[in-house]
Length: 271
Image (cartoon, rainbow, N blue to C red; front, side, top):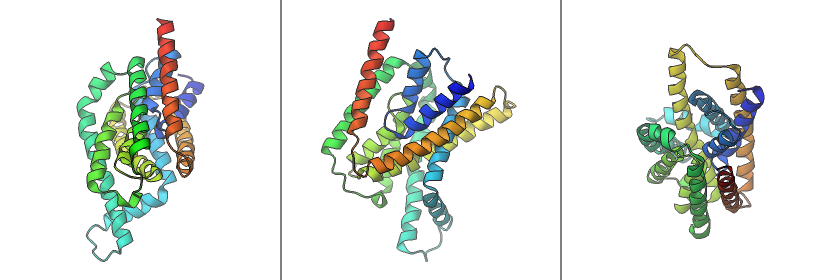
């Protein structure tokens, strides 16, 4: 991998992680058509950690407040606002549990059998249809502060499906939140915040393996890709949070379908 490929893959990861178009799906597509070898899992994890840093940076005030109030869990003298922020932190923990349990169980199967461009074509169209239904039929009236532990767990279950390339972690979690009645901005914010625990957890796990292996195979390209994903991820979050204040998810539905058609045609021609 050269510096341009590292920057390019980092930018693709950062942008597509937060837009509901599937980062893993795009990486599979680009790796296939550019003739790149499947990127090492450690490199993918570095890119994902970069996107986690982007979320932490963009929502830094939320993280600081939630952390302070979570640490003061036994303090009953907190006002309602601080108690709500404590509940937010608990909701993120609850929403992370399903992805951890299910992810550990099926990650090997997915990486072995489902990293395929045709799988990406199918999931791009399927989730596009789900987003369309959510846009058309959901009420979208609840605010971010109204997230409950039950709904957080349901969104967490949906997040576990994002291990399948083409599904899109942000796409499936935002869509689930819309079906549960939350408005677009609230759905996006919860999706972004929910990504951090699972990404950092995976990063710690892979980082520990690298450490025990003496960081064998790690090159400067890993850190270049990391920086690229941080910068592009931050920009993608800022864009989508502003975009959803006045627009809906339909442009992403069209994009997913057009991309799926283009990939399918290219695969047919190539074969």
